[in-house]
Amino acid sequence: MTQLNKNRIVIYGVFVAIYIVLTSIMFMTGRTHTVLIDNHAADDGSYRAINGMTVTLDRQTASEFFRGDRDKFSIKG
Image (cartoon, rainbow, N blue to C red):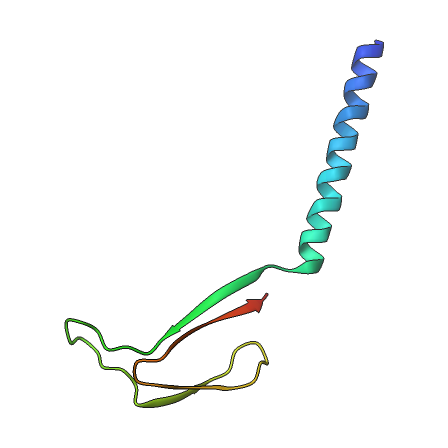
């Protein structure tokens, strides 16, 4: 093998190692998702808003929603 091929193999190996480390970090920290709760009636009347409901996401404290309420939650998973 020439010196150029050895250098390429080392560089590719470093890139693979960096990729594996970044993938592991992303897996360990998790990804956050935004969940939107919108308790509004449809404009065309195809469904109505719920009069009262309790929503619990990702072991957070329960939130109570009435007609016209809207909120967003960030969950990890």
